[in-house]
Every structure is written in structure tokens, then in C-alpha cells.
Image (tube, rainbow, N blue to C red; front, side):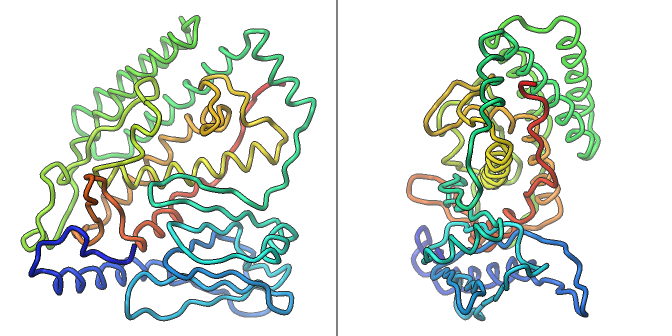
Length: 369
């Protein structure tokens, strides 16, 4: 991370490094914060997103000292100090594709202040969530198990897919109007009606319906154009000029989309990682067992309930990314193509995406009451 010469043509290194510096500077400007002045600052707590080499968190005289990492040179140092009870302390700290150190005193400080620490790797995968209180509510876990045994799991799964369809329609309606998007929205409305009137009698049938809905949903916005500059000097793959396809729930295989070869899919991975961390924290806070799900099969690497409850919110995360890509002009230096064809984001771009991707509120809806 922090270098763009890995896949450059010999003789263009100077230009590439200059482009990398320019784009890092461009994206990092999006993080200039408005700090409230006066005796009563607004208690508007936002996530603090860190990235780069040398991220360092320590406790000094009772205060949390945070040093952000470095992603390019030259770069001004970014050091922040938070006191206990500070109204401006972050709601959570997210480390994105960073290297550095965190002391045990920091973990204790964050726990006392109820500030989760989340680590996301360059693939958009949640590596760790630390600092949330963890303890099962025995009554809620028992209700989860009872729902599985009584057959109510299918009803819960249906409600999750119904909510996902509604949010997918809203996302389609937020896009520029075209005949294909109107047709897709109409198809999704029919699917929602069908789900309500004649719901599938098995999870397999429900996944089959979701697969058809997802295909039409993603197909409706895969042709949206992306704006670029600087491609005359640094060409990009032809399929990067438009948004590509994304797999549906029923078609997904483990890590199928993790190694994204397209910038938008790479961005979506980060958005889904933020969503996963938020849902996971909410489940733990409310005392549910994240491994007892209704729609996804249990997997040590994919807590079933977490991924169940992410489904209705995925279109919301999609909407945030679609709004972002439509409002920006990208440069080839924003992305690096690895030797295996995987697309990797400029760390400052990834940092901004993670901050913008946070869902305003996450609910576990009605699970097993």
C-alpha cells in the first residue's frame, strides 16, 4: 500500500508517482472536519477512519492519542487527542488496510468509553471487531433456537427478503430514469406482491426468487457510466468505463466477490464490510447469537445471523456507493491492478468510502419474539 509502481510500464514511474500523490491528496481533502467551537460543542459523534503505515493508538495521561498512518509523501502528520467523556470522541474507530500498533491500555480505554475498534483489510473483509460488550441473552437465544425448530425461520427469512426487495426498488428509483430501470422496478414490485400472496414454502424456493430479483436489480444499473480523467496517459480496462455485474445471494460462493477485478465491486466490498461490522455489533449488543441464522447456512467465517440481517440493508449500501461513483470523476491512480488481476483501491479513497458507507441506523428487526 502507498505505492503505485507495481503494475506500471517502465518509463512512466515518475508520472505515476506524481499521479498517486495528487489522488491521495485529492481524496484526503474530503476529511477536513468542522470542529465545533465554544463551550457546548455539538454532541455529533462520527466514526474515525484511519489508514496507512504507522497507525498508532496509545493512552497518555488518561487521554487517547491517535496517530493516523501515512499513505503518500509528503504528508502532514495527523495526531488527535480524546479525553474521557469528550463529546467529540468518535462513535467507533475503523482501521482500513493499515499497519501499526495498539496497546492494551487503549483496549481498556475504548471499552470504558464504549467505542468499538474495527479492522478492515484491503479486500473489504472485517478482520476484527473489538470493544463491544459480549454476552448472550439466554431468552433471546432460546427464542432463536425455538424459531428454527418451529418452522418460523422461514417466515423470518421471507420478511428479510421482502425488506430487501423494497429497499432495492428505492435504490433503483434513486438512479437516473431509463426504460431498463423502470422495467426492473416494475419486476421487483411484482416479485414483492408474489412473495406476499404466494410465499415460497422452503428456503431453497425463497433463494430462487431472490436470485431472479437480484439479477434484474443489478442488471438495471450495470450499464451506468463511470467518469474518468487521465486515461490517455494511463489506459484502463474497457469494462471499467461502466458499472459491472454483481452476484445474487443464491449465486454467491464463498469469497466469490472478495477478489474484485472492477473498481465498483471493490468499493461495494468496503461498504459491505462497514455494514457487516455494524450489524455484528448490534446483534451482540442485543444479546443474540450471531451464528444462529435463518437464511444463510452456518459457517465459521460467515456468522449466519449477521449475513441474514445484512440482506435488507445491502441495497442501502449500494445506494451510497452509486451516489458516490456518480458524483466523482476517477483517475487510474485511484486503483491498482495486482498481478492476479485484483483491483485494489487507493487507501485514501478507501478511507473516504468507509466513512461515507456507514448506515445511519441498524436494526435487528423482529427476530424471535
